[in-house]
Length: 427
Ligand code: LLP
Image 1 (cartoon, rainbow, N blue to C red):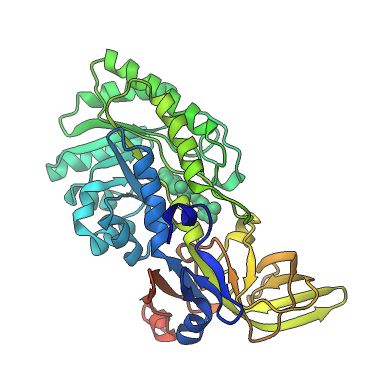
Image 2 (cartoon, helix red, strand yellow; image 1 turned 60 degrees about the vertical axis):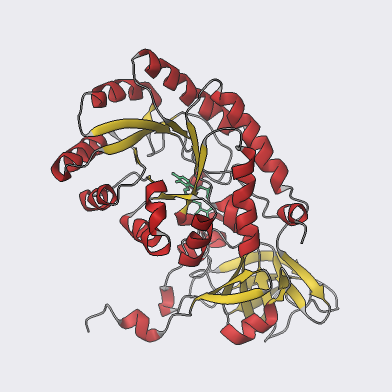
């Protein structure tokens, strides 16, 4: 397959009238029959290709792409990315253990972000000798110094600064304004670096910034990095040399199908960042999540019923908000396509799950070809923040996951069982 043609779109396309929708060359319907539904299916080829887009766009400078584990933390995907040189951005001790389980050598390429790290999590990361702690407050810096002294292990840190840059995205996933809970006011950072420079257990290693998620324009990234690069130059005058600038994640995708040129998006993003970095010669770190995995994944579901009430038609699927919460939580749009499209007049329907909440919907007033009970549908662009944000609400078992590598498909997570769910409980 021509890699540049794949990078511009989704890996899910109609194979033939008979085979229906495929992930690359692998038909989805047989996977759904074999492993059951709801079922997440991912394209390994696209995941690697997206990682490479970032690596190639920044090839002329020292850089490290630290994939944001929170977007999709499947061990098989972490292992795949680590094998292609990725580092990881983690936000909990749990995510650290995932990296250790998937690719222990990659612990040396881990950055630890997050607004509330516990002493136990900090200890775990110090013992694992991770690359850098992205510190979000003065109190956290003090805690890090205390734990490092206690364990007699030096801590490399970056301050995550809040650049006060507005990024046009959903309010729940915008983080770069002073009113948000994230980061340290950029005006305070210089004093904190100076203070930390005197502590023998703290190594001022870098500076980090992350302004939000699903940001479609390159401009806010340039503006944020520009502010950070200016601070780095000021710090140099204070004799504090930082080895790295971490520009965070947040590059958005197109959830509305159509033509999406991923390579062009990354190159536009790279030139905005390159320009803002100016003469900075240290290492650039990035924390993309969604851009790498979102379009590589689909959630395959089976239609349980088609119900007509008054003016409305509801297509009730076996997947629900607990499996993919993005529509309910962010009013997010996911394209929905039948695996085998049927002839007939398209109809306006609501696609909903069986959970006992009116918010349990995947689409409202969506025009779909006619569908019948038993038929399979795919919710597209579900590879990021899909299974990662799933729950067992309504005591529903979380879906299985399949990874398609070239012509091969393999199960990377079996469907949960009721026994799995009841294990921690004490009646
Ligand atoms: N770095 C940090 C510090 C972050 O907080 C995040 C995402 C990322 C990197 C990765 O951002 P990405 O490249 O994936 O945009 N659940 C929401 C998105 C939440 C993003 C949280 N932070 C959604 O489904 O849209």
